[in-house]
Structures are given as structure tokens and as C-alpha cells.
Image 1: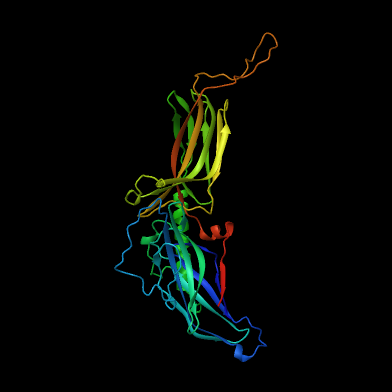
Image 2: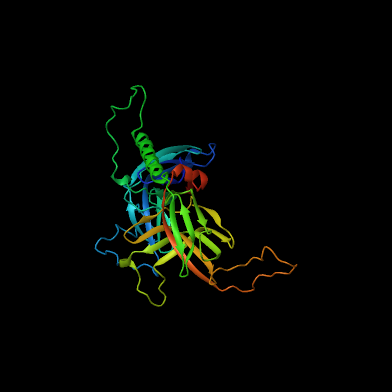
Length: 391
């Protein structure tokens, strides 16, 4: 019996273009007092990162698979296929890397191997929607002699920042002093440079503040004015807005605002409308604020963007966009008064109207949501960074 443990040193969240580092430890769990006949052996172990794509058949019409290029021995248990047994199809993978060959462990002995690979920048982000799913995993395959391959899968979350695909690591080192006595890690240096560049771009895109005002009206007149200071956000930020109802000519009784994502299947992959066909557009609400606002002149709200959500993206099959969805309940009666008169000659009992005729309408305001630091996401919304299997 051999135990294989894979540990992601920095957590399970990465930015596309970063280097993933994983420590793979292989252990013979028998006590050291066991006889030498209890030694265990593995023929080889290999690791590979891949992205699985799965689409809902009721929402997405995919073209038939290309049968001219079948998988290499898909039914063989002695060929390393990281996506074996997974739902959907593998749309992206890195070259496999061999960790070791002909490993023999005595009782109580363990050995560790380091795996490092740069996450591809041309792939989609990790996403679990109602129409499609993009799932990243690091798969480690181990095999005993004359035995089937055993697969250990480590789930990953990949964030994609548009624009980093075309950036090249600078090769000119003349601007930075170096020490000949220190060993420099080229991949670590590139990683820190990429993280710094991504942080600068995110800060530049989300730090600009300028008041944007929107007049809100229905068929009878102006309801109020909505103000927001920016339209580009990062995961984990709060969407803050103000609503001025004192300038309106139509009484607003209640309003609600929802932070939503809109998942839309591209037209060429949409199912034709019919029985049993799900809609090609779906919405998910991540935060909501509701308020009764009669006689309110000014109010505000704050909606947090969850760190576990997916930033906006677009692929050939699906697009994901963010928006603020407003719903207003207004009075049909102009000049509606629901307060008792301030001055009365004699004491009297005043009651408000039992029924008020109302109208409802909605309004959508698109916003843009970008990724944030993978370290922050791993710390605030931790996920499993260690996986193990016994062979």
C-alpha cells in the first residue's frame, strides 16, 4: 500500500499565466519495524493540468464531435489520460510531466517531488453556470507494474485577466541589480512580475471614480435620479449607489436593486425554442437590497461582490456579464398624499388609504467585474489545497 499526497503550496486559486507549484509526497505507511519484504514500488508517476468543458443539452446545441481524431486508446487502463471518467470534453491541457520512474519505498519511507507548470492564458476562467461549466484540475497518474493507472485529481480555480495574454516577460535585466552569490528562480521572478503587472492593471481599471447620474422615469414622469461613482469593480468590492427621490414627480412606494450575473449562450449554439428547451439566458442574484421609500427623499445601498463568483468573460459558446437590476413600485395617482394634514382645527382620527393603485417597472444598468488577487481569494474563501489517494 502506498499513499500519495498532493499539496498546493499557495492555495487552489491562480491567475492564468502564473506558475502552479505542487508538492507530491509518496509514502509507504507501514511502520519502519516491518520486514524488508514489505517494500512497495511504483513504476512511474506523471502530472498534467487540464480544463473540462460540460454543456447542458437542454440549453446548448453543440456540433457533433470530430470522429476523425479519436482519443488514443480511450479504453486502455495503462495509458495516462487525465480526463478519463470525467464528464464533458477536455478543451485545454498542458504537456504531461514525469515526476519519477521505478520508485521503491521501504516501510516508513517517503519521498517528495515538486511539480511546476504555467497555467495557459488562452483558456476560459473557472465557471459553473447553468448552461456550461469550465472546470480545471491537476491530475496525477501513478501506476504499479502490471496494474491499472490510479488518478489523483486536485481541483483548481483559475481567474483570467484579459490583456495578459499578449504581455511578454522582459528579458532585459540591466535595470535591476543582481548578486552573483544568490541563486535566482526564473519562474518565481516571472510569477512575481506577472502578479505585480496584474495588480497594477486592476488598480488602474477600478480606482477611477467619477459620478455618473441616471434619470429614472416611467410613463407618467420622473421618479428620481440614481448616482454611482464607478462602473468597473473587482471581486470582493462593494457596489455603492445613491437614489434621490426628492426630485421626482411620481411617488415611489418601494424599490429593490439586485446584483446579478447574466449567462447568455451565443446565438449559433442556442437551442431552438420548443418543448423541453430551456431558455438561452439565465440570471443569478448574488446580493439584493429592498426598501420602502414613500416620503424618502434620498437613500443609498451597498451590495458586496462575492469572492467566490466569476468575473465577466466571453467565449465562443457563452458570455457572462454583470448588471444592477432595479425594480420600482410607483403610484398611479399624481400628487399622492399619504400623510395627515399638519394643522387640524379639532382632534380627529386619520387613517391612510387601504388601497393604492400602483405600477411596476424595471431597469438594468450594466457594470463590469474583474478578478482580484488570487492570494486574497484563497485567504477569504479557502478551498481544499491538499488531496490524497491510497494505491
